[in-house]
Image 1 (tube, rainbow over the protein chains, first blue to last red):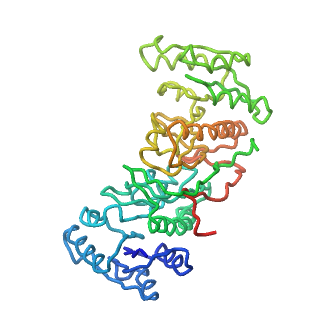
Image 2 (cartoon, each protein chain N blue to C red; image 1 turned 90 degrees about the horizontal axis):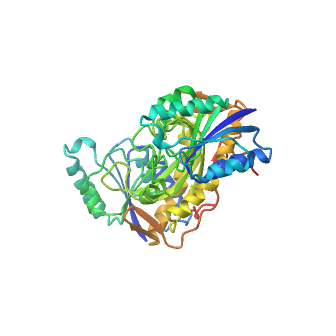
Image 3 (cartoon, each protein chain N blue to C red; image 1 turned 180 degrees about the vertical axis):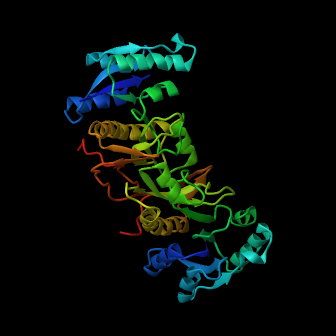
Length: 218
Length: 218
């Protein structure tokens, strides 16, 4: 059974989705440790309720980003973590963490990468006027939201969407695809070739969607 | 009934899709003229079969892009064109054409803009390793594939896709959404506010898709 280390800064709804999937027996993994840079993160409370070990590593403890990451690596190794899960971790991680867990760090981003990387994602999507957005689980490399894509989900963007309504629609998909990506990793089904992640015995998604809907053809 | 001017350089399958939609009575418009920069474009043959007026304006006729576009504007005005349709027109158009038809020029691009603009679109998408791509109909502004988005369609990208198989999957969607976009324009249902195109009495697209498929949740 693989052992996860989850890094969080905020509310932790993706952490909760992973916990829920494990509790329902549909994701065969355990969480060895939850680490936050933010002592007030509700994610820490979620972990404690499950008796998952937690660690706070304050932003203020280290002046160099690399030293911060060395501390993270130390904690993750102490807990024998196999796969690192970034779940709303609001820090840019360095080569120190990446090299310690090569292709064993996942992140989730609330857009269809490569579109709308970085911050203020929903604002950027609405201002551009895209008709679809979504969520992306990817392996982490040294760029910002640039690593190899594991799984994506798409949702329509509506004319009356606000940042909040769009974020909520995307978040529901995040809670589905992040546990799925971890499951594929745990089963040894992910293969990374260059930037492309292929999946052994993949379930082929069929169909297409248009937005606005195509009404003139049946 | 609105009158279209279609600009093409190649095979003209999108032109054919528009002709087919008109013939089936599901798109209430006519094509006043088809213009190509390429005398060998099969699109010209498609137009002639329908007795649609055609014009060839060779790349070599004008040294300045603006002069080329002045010639296009002259032809389009002569044929009383209301809406200009770029359908695989392999030239970059200038402010001369854009200012003559403000928010009355549409283009289709075989990707989910803003991802993968420009040329070699499928190659870029496959190399990035995205799990979804698609097609975008947009109004044309002075950037390359940057104008306000009217309609988009999404399709999954498969592990064994080549540029050709992905292009073919996207092309089927192009043939659906381009006539739909023209119909929405013809019915006066498109409103452009800044970069956002909203649609009066829009048919709300529901649902979501993930790729690879999410199997752990029902």
